[in-house]
Length: 274
Length: 273
Image 1 (cartoon, one colour):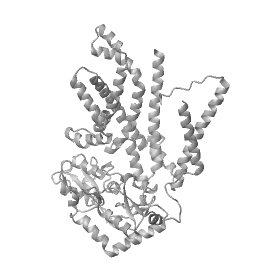
Image 2 (cartoon, one colour):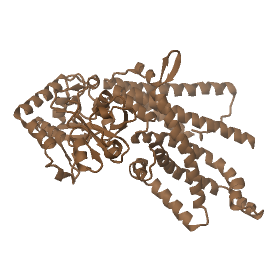
Image 3 (cartoon, one colour):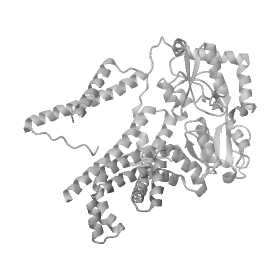
Image 4 (cartoon, chains in turn yellow, blue):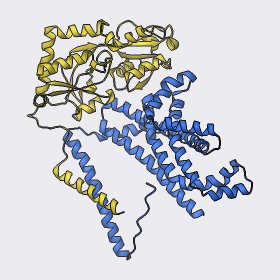
């Protein structure tokens, strides 16, 4: 009892002290101090991302590689700072940005109106589209998007991704089964428990090439086109302007296009994974 | 929760009441300060609170009828998963405990191996293993995989509690029961377990509370329980903090009512003897 009372008193007093002192916020909400300024001062650019082939993945040594990794690394180099990647679950990546766990999301994030209400997006630095890979066991012979728009069809997708938005829009009659990770969604289709997976190109096509006995592509190419941007916290004009112009700069240079071609149209990087 | 015994204080009645009021005032002020701290933190973040958007996910009124919203439907799934797992894990726990105390060497080794394997690996890994690796082989449904994983995990902990409860029954009880010629089953059934139950209730209840909280993990295999429904809504609306607080409050109500019910039952039991 004695100890409990004492403990209680400690909690009580610390709550009192903290509330008087004002809660220490996770970020300095000082308007003159833009994120870019803070990054330059601390010498580290913290980038939020989620593993997602071939945007960001781990090679055999455990090092991160991929299109987004190249972009973020180059961005940090041009700013003259070090880059630090903060791998985050996709479903929690926006809250993590808002609470200052990192400075920017560079993770193949599609620019969606609903997302834009919570964060600011840069100009698109890339365009992606959704494609689909289906299970031979469950969906044998079904071709085209419309074939999957039926009651009783189950589509797996990553929670909180634009794949979910696209599935709801184009396959309103199908049921969606959501997983926190891309890998789990593909495992589900490999195990023949769902008819298909909807995901950002080119992963569905890669999966079909990897498992020709279990999977097939019910449609060629992509069925949506989505702009991809960096996401930053709202109300920081300086940072948004810097990133926009950086994107313009590396686009004009042709560097972005060259990197995109390497990661999305060749398979030269496959050897680094296994 | 249920291990807190009421403060026994001697003294005169008025002084007691006064102390009581002061005590409660302290509680209220502290809680208020902590809540204020959370909100101050929220304000500091520049987070745009939109609590008014939450109720529609709990219930909606259409044509004068109350319709359960997605969160309450998720709660039903959580209750189903937890309920079935609770029964199954009690059974697994009892069998394991009896195996560990049995005369057969094999039963002891198997029970011990199961216990150590489950206790020393994370539940999430077990869940993924059962759902993605084991269940395609035997054709288990998602619900069954979730229940099996939860029951195996919680059953291991329950078995230790049950074993301790059985061992707490004095040796003399066994000897007395044996001397009047009862078989093993009837000794357990009529003599040992009824007495052991009293020791076991409090830790078993906290185990049940753990089970309910752990059931949130089944959301990772796309079972639409309370947690998953919440995540789904958050993914669409980005009402991150409002919904997580709401979900936490629902879990809290669920586990607190469980603790309360058991306390009442314990009181009834204590009266009966």
